[in-house]
Image 1 (cartoon, rainbow, N blue to C red):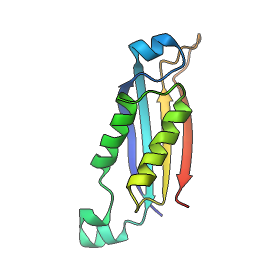
Image 2 (cartoon, rainbow, N blue to C red):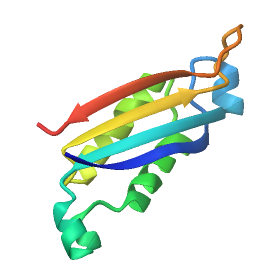
Image 3 (tube, helix red, strand yellow):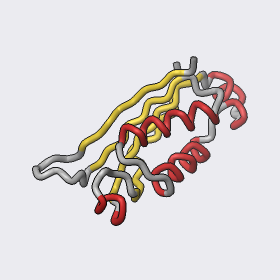
Image 4 (cartoon, rainbow, N blue to C red):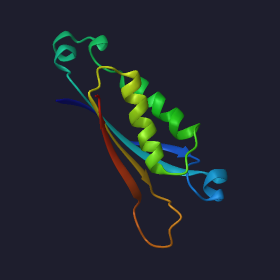
Length: 120
């Protein structure tokens, strides 16, 4: 299966359990991998034969910056659902949501969830 890879997209969102996270927000980084057949797009050089990563980015941006969830698990699930619901060529979507400023007392790079969903 071919893949469109969208890596390290940065957003400021208000996702989190704590009130400070809901009010002040924080940085999030998202990776999204779209699994689909790109052979026709490659042969025909035709955008209609693929999925516009610009359109997928815009949908993810709305989820990350305008919607609000307590858990990054819910954020990742929402991204997977929106991608599959709106892009029929995508057979599988893989999403990673990273939270580098999680309110955890300690030293770390980030906390994250990874999720994969396939078309049924």
